[in-house]
Image (cartoon, rainbow, N blue to C red):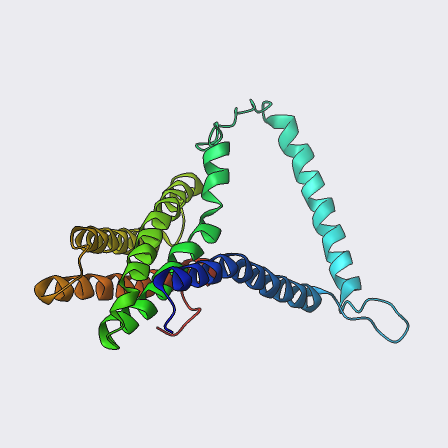
Length: 241
């Protein structure tokens, strides 16, 4: 007996929820390992007697003492001839009142995993539906597309808030490109959902071709946008392309 689409949708939903919790945990574990390795690399080595090895420490101390004496004499001379400086009030931070928005924006790395998981599951189900002729899986694909499209809303919202509250960045051009690519992906997914909901009896002919084209475009934009997001987080030279 072939499993019903409800049975399949329930299993896929459980896999999606599991990936939501497992993926950030694995990423956090990897980040902790990298931080520990970097901290050990920065720790100065010790000699056989247990003392920290600092080459030329005596010469550096003597030079530092001489500079301190010279600076102190120069400061006394300038204080005698210069009027007291008027303290300049610091300008208020541009993002000082964005506490809640900043907090919500920091949830973006977690929120993006949800639509990625749903969309990847949708690709597998659609491949079985349209390539392997398992038409009984069409309702499951419709539910997965709905879940993927709806889960893009918090991902997009948190990303826009993160960009608005994070302030200027050296990777500003890449951030804007990443934003535009992911907005285009969400638009393609929404169009595919609208097409699929309008043809509840099944996708045939030109409707199927248009739907598959939209899903393929959404998947391609997801790969490009995810790649850009990784370069924003880990650096432009993280990958050679």
